[in-house]
Length: 494
Ligand SMILES: *[C@@H]1O[C@H](CO)[C@@H](O)[C@H](O)[C@H]1NC(C)=O
Ligand SMILES: *[C@@H]1O[C@H](CO)[C@@H](O)[C@H](O)[C@H]1NC(C)=O
Image (cartoon, rainbow, N blue to C red):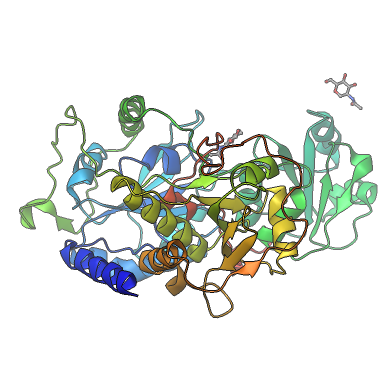
């Protein structure tokens, strides 16, 4: 009790100490927050088109744009990335300077170039409305969808004849943003084509026996003889799940490999420089010119030779990719307490916030040299995910549990049935973690058979998780950028 109170007080003090000019976009906003540190991975390396707003929290036009920008982000979920950089933050000033930002807000559309990691950067000077932004960005979505007809079908099928293929049969002539986004998700693993329902495609329709439109057919081995017809809704999430039987969608952003901070920084700096070479010069049409505004505005002539000192970000908690990892570090007969964030495919904002909060809490403890049991993300693609959920009688969504394999107990993060944003704030997570540390609250018995009987090769009574498995990491604020849940908007209809 006393302990929890102290934590709350400490959190309140921390909040009070935070600078007042926080950014315009909260952690739960659909707008991704970008900085010099994560730009390369989130935006420059992506196969998706992004729009990035360079803003300052004090700028009136930026505040006016915020609702429209968030609306655009919602409408573009799954189709393109909508991001923002707070140029008023000291650590972001050199980064904004590199992009030649001279006034706020400056909007730039960043489209993948022919070389990976070298995007094409263009200013967006269109209307500052959700529709204006959405239309401009949709127009710049890379199109890897081949339009095929009777004459070209055979050639398309024969090309890389072992590569999985997907064909959408449709009444429409234009390729939808939705289909383009699907081709981006499977770029490199599934060739995507579109066949229109007209006289020029009669033979193709007959070959596949298609009579209704739209129809999506998957050829897992690339051969026309093996078509699997999709019978679900024409919604991105479901379609991607269907196509995933032939190939795994590209993770975007690509998971970060663990690297030494030094080499990472120098590499990133040079990358950022390269990207700006293609950036067009100063935004001219911005309405707020720095010189006329506050004195703390970043000067576009910033020198970037000096190393940028960034506050140490909380490293993201580890992801368990395989069932084996899960059993070694968390669900073994000798493993101690650990927390699992059971993260469904296409996590929503709550899932992203949960991962963020656990990362912050783990980081805080580490900084204070306090020993704490480990936290892991257990993603849906891990075979142990479905098994664990089944055994514990859980539904589809995000679930968060603490579990102790050695003692055979588990407990759920408290919520009103479904985990909501308020359940996964840093404070809520910290309080829950503290309660577990203090052994408070009821525990449930783990069902039989969940923990493998055989001896785990880990040994070591007290610290089973000390020898960490090599797992890939996903950055906290990037989880949000992963494939979104969004139901698609009218303009994405097929
Ligand atoms: C598939 O491609 C390979 C190599 O390009 C070729 O040898 C083979 O004959 C092709 N098979 C079919 C069925 O077209
Ligand atoms: C981009 O596409 C390539 C295939 O061309 C793929 O290997 C890579 O993983 C994709 N990158 C991301 C970040 O999705």
